[in-house]
Length: 591
Image 1 (spheres, rainbow, N blue to C red):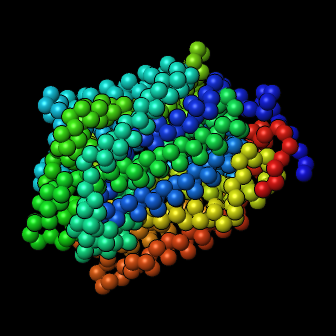
Image 2 (cartoon, rainbow, N blue to C red; image 1 turned 30 degrees about the vertical axis):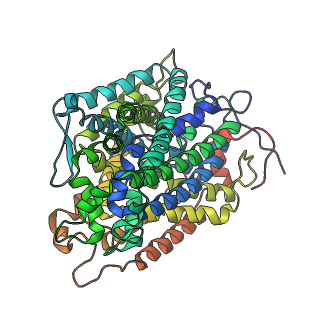
Image 3 (spheres, rainbow, N blue to C red; image 1 turned 120 degrees about the horizontal axis):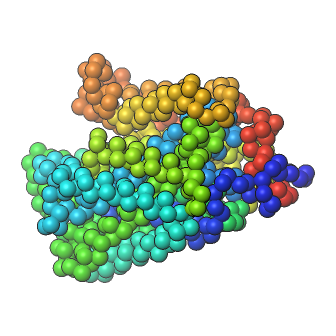
C-alpha cells in the first residue's frame, strides 16, 4: 500500500475551515441522538398507527434497518472527510460540482424544514393545556390542525431563540445539548416502562384485524406509513455528527462511532415507543371507532385522530391522563418543549453548516462563510436558517403537513451518500478509512434502491411539491453564479453528474403513474387533476403501474442510475483536485 500525503491543512491532518474543533465523542453522538429523539416520538406513534394499525411495528423495523444501513455508509464517509456540512459535500468530491450543488440543496431543504416542524410540535402539544388552548386548533371532523393567534408568535419566538443560542457558539451548544439529550432519551424510556407495566392491553394487537388489517392492502399500508406516518422523519438525525465534522476534536475516531451508536439507540427506543403506544390505547377507543357506519375495518384506526381531538394534539400526555397518571402527563408536556426544542436547536446549527459547506464549494454567496471573531460560528448562515424556518411555517401550519416533505428531502439527501461511497471506492480505494463498510459493492446500491423506494412511497403529491422546492434552489444558485457572488464558484462537471436530472425526472414519472397517492402542487391543480382518480394513483383506463410491479420498476430504475453514475464518476485526479487537502495524512486501509 502506498501512502497518501495531505496537501495543506494544519498538523494532524484536520483541515482548518475557520471553525473551532472542540466537540468530543459524546458531543457528536448526543448531537445525532438529540436530533433523532425529537417530536417524532411524541407524534410519530399516533400518526403511523392511524395509517397502518398494529402492522406499523413492521414499518418501524423496516425503516430502522434502512436508516442503519445509510448510517453505516455515512460513518465511512464521515471518517474520511472531516468537514462541516458533510452530507452536502460528499457527492461533490465523488461526482463534481453539479452533484455537489444538487445534493447540497437537498440537504439544506431537509435541515431547514426540521426546525419549524419541531416548533410546531411544541405549540401543538401545549394546545391541550387550558391557558394555551387557542395556540393550535384541530378540526374534529378531519383531525387537521393549524396555528392560531399567539401560537404563531410563540413559534416564531422559538426560532429566534434557536438562532440566539447558536450564535453563542458551538462549544456551549455541545455542552448544553449533552444534558438536554440525556433527558430526551430518559423520558421516552420512562413512558415505555410505566405504560407497559401499568396500562397495557395486549388485545389491541389483535383488534380490528390486528397486524393483518381487514379490508386493507397490508404491505402497502406498511410502506406508506414509513414516509407519511413520520417514521423515517423520526429516525432522522444520525448524520448530525457528520455535519459537525469540521468542529470535531478527533473526527477520525469519533465520527463513525457517534453515527452508529446514536442510530442503534434511537431505532430501539422508537420501536419500543410504538409497541407501548398501541398497547396503552383504551380498548373502548378502538371499539368506538369500529362502530362508524360505512367504513372499512382497516380505516377505523384512522378515526383515532378524528374522533379523539385531545389524542391527536398530545398523544402520550392524553394516554397518561386517561390512565390516571397525571404526574407522567406533566412530565410529557415538559418534554414536549425539551425534545422538539433540542432537535430544532441542533437543526438550526446544521442548516447554517450546510450553507457554510455550499459556500465553501462555491455554490452560494461567499457571505455564508463569514464567522464571528469570538465564537467562530457562521453568523449569516444561522440568521438565514431562522428566516427560512419561519417561511416554512406559513404554508405548512401543522406537524403532519410538513412530515412528507421533510422525509422526501431527507431521503433524497441520504441517497447521495451510497452513490458517493460507491464512486470513491472505485476512484480512491487506497484511502485510509477509520471505519470500513463491509460488502460495500452490494450494500451501496441496495441503500440507493431503498432510499428511492422511500421517496416513491411518499407519493406524487409530496414528490411534486419537493421538485418545486428543488427548482427554486437551482434558480438561486444560478443567480449566485450569474452575479459572481462567490469567487470560488467551480466549473460545472456536467459529465460526472449527467445522471442527476434523468433520475429526478424518472422518479417523478414513476411516482405519477404509481400507487402511492396523487395531487400536490402539480397533480392537484391545472390539467393534471383531470387525469387522477380518487387519489389512488390510477390513471383512467387502468394505465397505472400495478402494486408490486411499481416497486420492481423503482428498484430496476435506481440500479440503472446507480451504475451509470459509477461509470461517469470523477477520475482519481479529479477527486484529488477537489479533496486532496482533506485526506487522512497517515497510511491507508485498502477498501
